[in-house]
Amino acid sequence: MDADVVVVGAGPVGLMLACELRLGGARVIVLESLVAPTTESRASTLHARTLEFFDQRGLLDQLGSPPVQSSGHFGGIPLDFSGLPTRFPGQYKVLQAQVEEVLARRATALGADIRREHEVCGLEAGADTVRVRARTPAGLVGVVARYVVGCDGEDSTVRVLSGIDFPGAAGTHELLRADITGIEIADRRFERLPEGLAIASRLPNGATRVMVSVFGRPVVSRMGAPEFDEICSVWQQVTGDDIAHGTPIWRNAFDDTSRLAGRLRSGRILLAGDAAHVQMPSGGQAINLGLQDAANLGWKLAAVATGAAPEDLLETYHEERHEIARRVLGNIRAQGLLLLGGPEVDATRTVLRELIAYPEVNDRLAAMIAGIDVRYAIGGGEASGTGADRQHSPVGAAVPHVELAVTSTTAAAGAPGTDPASTAALLRSGQGVLLDLADCAGRHEWLSGRLAPYARRVDLVAATLPAADGGGVFAGWETVLVRPDGYVAWVGDRYSDPGPAVDFWFGSASGGGVSGSVPGVVPVRVGSL
Image (cartoon, rainbow, N blue to C red; front, side):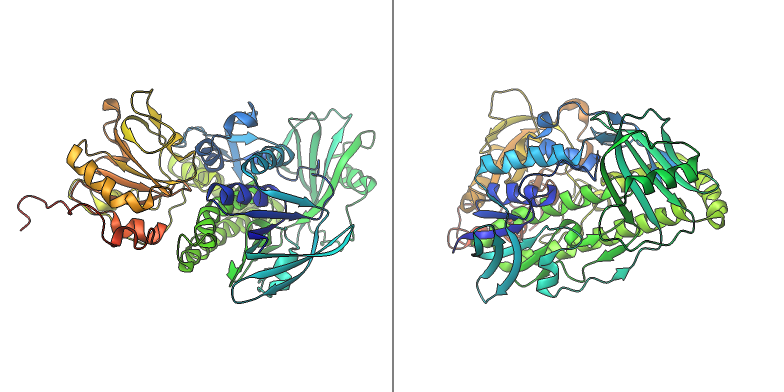
């Protein structure tokens, strides 16, 4: 066996997945057909939930200080992101090439084996392993692993070879796109002109990105990128401006194709990112959707591939991310109609613009695009306790950024006696975290016994909340289980047993897990007998 997991594709999603797998202890080989990292940047925007996850992995500093836009759009209609309940209320302009560079450096440092000039051409799935065949300059090679994940884009070889169906709708509207140097033109924010749609903006690298579409023009069957002359001609047709004196550094065409894999998993083969879903890149949602796929899958697959958790855990990847992808593709299809439809959509745009003027509507749409409205239908133990209204339980939502006063911890971050540790810092190791907020030594000692078999996968942290916080989202909850991807898996009071939830998400360990014979007796609520 060459690896626990083979990841096909060294784009942002594949590299993020490699990082997460290594944090979980899995041996990883990444196969990439390109000789070197591409300098092209199809995507240029990171959203709030992605920035929160980068913070939870200690990667924010490596992104530098990217430009931030407090505004976004829905189908070209402006949205205000500044009031979102997150530390990152805006759209962060980070080129895809920079994201890949940061993640490649991180994956390599963690021990991932990235092999370039490996073009996958065959898969043979067996009962316990998958053999991957790839063409290389030295000839055909084979790699054997327990699992294979296709992160190889919308034309995914892994998806095709696995036979996973890819239903959806072919595109009916096409946009031409180019990054150009040597031109000075006005920014255009989704301008619907009589002939079509025009967009122009300056990128962090100094180039100007233009995108243009002619209303009613059919999608062109292409063998490669459009010629610069064609882009210039269409741009002039729609805007009246001449950009032919510029120098193109990248060109491509895309359309509003919308497809979602019928399954994100077929036995030992899984899909993530554009290999799993293809959508028009509206507002940068595509790259962010894919990165969140990797965050959700990585820790689960690492646990299963190393034998630390049962295979059933992988089903939660499909259950959670397939639904999220369906929702995102739905909002992108709606935006595509608003952006690229002809005069027939003008009345709908007018009504929506009036609705977005209401803060509640603006914030709902902005949160959806930013990815912070995600709430997984999480099982594995119900919230319990009498200190909070269960309707306001944080289970399934991303853990908020809270500065904690840590009194005891098994985590590397936030050792007792240091400055307060944030919830983000406690997730840096890529492990789960059980927060003990009860401020009760007996309870903490009992929890230590319950979690003993999980010492390498779940950190136990005793902490108190800031007095000024008033408890916030944790008000009334005294025990909180946070998954490695930063989502709350379970909450309870000081009398609650987290054992079933820990067992569900982290599997049996040390010959039985928390459901087996471990120290401690479940505390009994006074008056409950």
